[in-house]
Length: 325
Image (cartoon, rainbow, N blue to C red; front, side, top):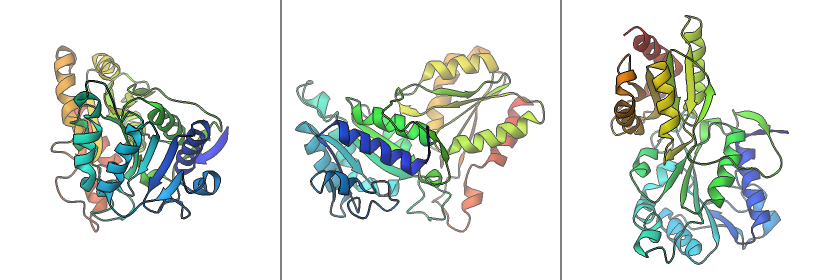
């Protein structure tokens, strides 16, 4: 296997998708010769030409509107929104058009070959316009799939699966890990099944659940807990819509405890949906209340970024409180 960082893995996935599918087109702001603001699309225009990898105007609603039309006529559309914070002008296109194309036509036409890539999350001193985690807005939208990888291996396999899935997918990439996360990644073609969570670490005392960049922080907290004799089971949800209820519920029934952590603010975050479902599925097995360790209910602060984030120390304290309840 090759050593890749997360950016290189994403680039490799798009390269393979474009090589194996002549209808695959990559587009977005600065993705052409420049290779994107993070260089995720580097050299794709050189390899596949300006007709298949090209820049768009600075209009997110226009990017996704064009993507819907491209996918509707049969092309594989791979759109980039430069930062997840900028996806809101395209919200109407995604939730009212992309998600409902198949339904409103009675399955006569669809935009299932659409994938929207976008970097999300904090930890890069980007301030409130370059640090948000808006995944929960889209999990409320039937017709979409929402996917978030945690490392290079997952990023490549999940992105290839997303591009080839027959539903529109919003693929959130943890930009804090773009160059920080490095690992072994197959150079060839492979896919990781969507809608299936992964048990990253087995444990007996508490289940820790997260996705994307948060998994690294959960693992740090679990190591600290292990020093106190607390055995943590760690699950990476990977796909938020639809999410793998069975894997999480089976784990919680074994451990009796659940802690969910995400970067997004607490109120209205996807952790609340998970907590409600697991409470219903596992109520008689719970030894303590389901815990949530999330971002604060404030706009993302530049000067107080570290205080705002749900870091490994906050997770560790919540683990102890849950076990000692």
